[in-house]
Length: 454
Image 1 (spheres, rainbow, N blue to C red):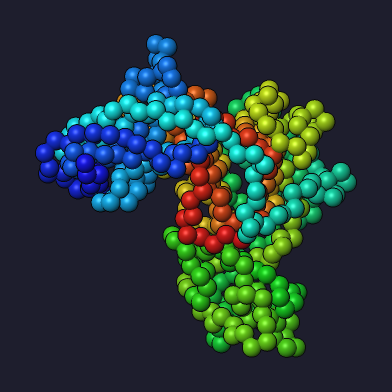
Image 2 (cartoon, one colour):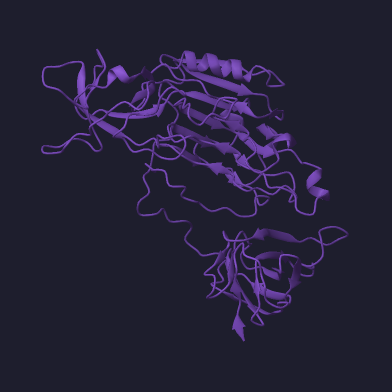
């Protein structure tokens, strides 16, 4: 027997392919690899269905049968073409047997089924999770002045004033914490756009870059070693040349550092790392006109967006939810069916309503507590043969910092609502803590899109 040749996005000109066998490797407690063996013919795509016996993985869900689907896999999930065609499948329950059905797409016209196979997942490993060696623990405690220096407001039952309330919170963020209580059990339907620019961000332009490549900000008040971040402001310009630029939105949110010029309170050099004797500064030059700059750590108070259920009636601070039992006391951000398409808008969008990646608000110090991030149960997903997947629940931008997701739930109302990407997690010093990802989101894994991670 020859193992399958995988022809990605190319016409298959061979005779009809027959899937002769499916076998498994690297079977763990939640993942396995399914290998596809054919009679030598090629194929262009793969579908994998699975079901817990006695359910049939070839029969659609309904009429007493339940099956799940890993989706059409072209190149993301299929490994090592031309050598060994296999699919990595994840999101399974430990110590559970699954019926597995695989079919391949042949001659750009026909799905060909393979034999039904069974795989038994291993038991869950003991000892819990181990933090990666490179992981950095960040502070996630409530602000020390929460009780004495906070303004608290209740958002309207239909969330119609949420954006207005958030605008006001950003306006006072340099001096006051703000708590915005969301109505319990009510659905704030998105997309909600949060594109405000905090008051500690400095709006600069080409005149702030000196001919020698240094910068000038009169009365900046910083000392050597101060960390700074750059962000794009509008269409008129980009962050300065000489900095790292990433993708369409240019700034990847990394930290730079300054060295003041001796006896000069207004001018400074910019370095890629904390400056040391002998290090060479970056030579900056304008790229257009306007751009943003801010010092880090941010000189801001906190904005806490939370369920109106107080902490003494909710899962305690520092304790994981562990299940969906707390849902009756949570608030909801729900993405409507209008956003149910590839690259559709997220529930919260940290861009302006035009989805302009080139305008970076540089929001920071926002904490979400006791919120169920979910989607509408789109009826179209029950009847479509290949319904679209939901895009981001939350799309955090790389120039944001200190975003905390605390005791929240990520879920879909049914298995028919497939999720493509749950979180776009960017920026510095941000965390998801003590939260719960429901099994309706059948699997998740991190993907590095190329930006810097600090």
